[in-house]
Image (cartoon, rainbow, N blue to C red; front, side):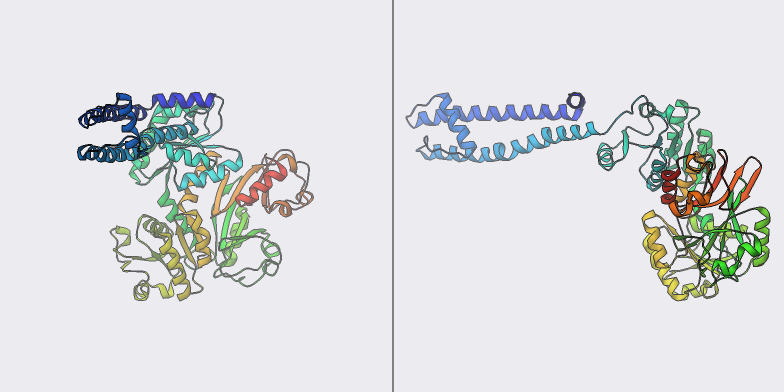
Length: 565
C-alpha cells in the first residue's frame, strides 16, 4: 500500500504526466466529435437514399466501419454513400487503429511506467543513516572507491540527478539518492551530517567547487575529498571547504616515474606506517636476479625480511624458494638502518645513470618528466604534437611512437626504462607489446585509464601499471582512514591495523596468518616499541598495531579470520 501511495503521489506530481493526460482528453474529445459528425452524416446520406435510421444506428455503423469490423448488415447503395464509407473507413484506420494506441502508449502508459520506475529510486535515506560515503558522480574513481569501502563496512551512496541511471544502478546493487549534486536539499535528504565522507570526483573543476561549497555549510566536520584537473583549482577547492584535494594527473605521473630509475636497484621508500618504512626495490640491475631468496640471504647478510615479490601484476608471498627475476619488485618493511644497509649493498644512493623514454606528452607525461627531473634522471619524450612545456625543451621527439625511427631518435635503443602515459588504453596495450618485442628486457611502466585494463597491460608485458581510478580511490581512502593505508603498486597495499580480537594472545605461527589469509606481517608496534619483521613466535598483546602487506582479497580474508581491530 505504501508503494501504491508513493506512486500515486509521484503521478499526480508529474507535470509531464498531467500535460499528457490533458492532451489525451483533447484527442478523445476530437475523436468523439468526429464519430458524432459521421453518425449525423450517415443519417443524412441514408435519408437521401430513401431509408431512415436512428442516431444510435448511425453510431453503430460509424464505429463498426472505423474499427474495420464491417458486419455488413447496414450498407449504402449509392456511390455518394459508398464514397462516404471509404472516408469513414480510412479516417478510422488512421485515428482509431494507429493514432489512438500510439497516444495512449506514448502519453499515458510510458509516463506511468517511468513514474513507477522512479519510485524505485530513493530520494531520501533513512534518518538513522550514519557512517556512509556520499559519491557525487558515477565515474571510474567513484567506482574504485566503492569497491574498496564497502568490503570494509562503509556503505557508499551515489547522488545522481538522472532517474533512469539511478534505477539502473539500483538494480545493479548500488545505493542511490536522486537529486542534483549542487542542491543543499539533496544532501539533507542524503544525511550528510552523518556521513563519513563526501567524494567530489567529476572532471569539471568549476562544478566540483560548486558541490564543495554546497556541502560545507551543511556540515563543518564531514571530510570532503575532491579532485582537481588544473593546479590553479587546488587553492579554490580548499577555500571552498575541501579537506583533501587530489591532482590526479600529477599523482599518476609521479607514480609512474617512481617505478623507473636511472639504472640502480636501490630501495625507494613509498611512505611510513607506524614508524615502518615501506619500500620497494626493483630487481632489475641487482646482483640477485636469478637467485632464490634463500640464495640471496637477505636475512643473514642484512637482517632484512622480504615480505613478498611483485611481478607484473602477480603478488607472491616471500619464501625461501621464491625466485627473483629481472622484472621482480621486492616489497619490504624496513627500519632506517636496514634501508641504509640495503642501498649500500646495491650501490649507494640512486645516482643518475642512463635515460628514460616517456611516450605521451600530455599532463601525465609532463608530470612524469618533472618527477624524473626532480630525481636528476635524464629523460626523452615522444609526442605526436611536440610539446610546449618549458621543461621539455630540446628533449621531445615529435612523431608516432609506433614508428621505429621515431623511437630510435628518442633514444629507445639504450633507454633504461619506458613510461607510457597516453590516455588511451588500447594505444598503451599496443605500444607495450611493440616495445616489449623490440627490447624484451627493458622495464616498462604504463598508465591505465580503466582498472579493467590493468591485467591486460600486465599480460602485454608492462612491469608496472597504474590507473587514475586506483590512485584517486586509494588517496581518498587513505585520507578517510587517517593515513593507515599506502598503495605500493596497483592492487597491493601496506596497511596499519590494530591487533584484531582473533590474534590477541596468540603468535603468528599459532594463528597461521600467512596460510589462512595470504597477508604478510612486516612489523608490530606497541608504544615506543617497534619490531620490524616480527618473529613467528612473537605473542601478540591485546593492544598494539600490525603493518600488513595485502591485496583487497587478502584483507577481506584477514578480517573474516580474525575480526577488525
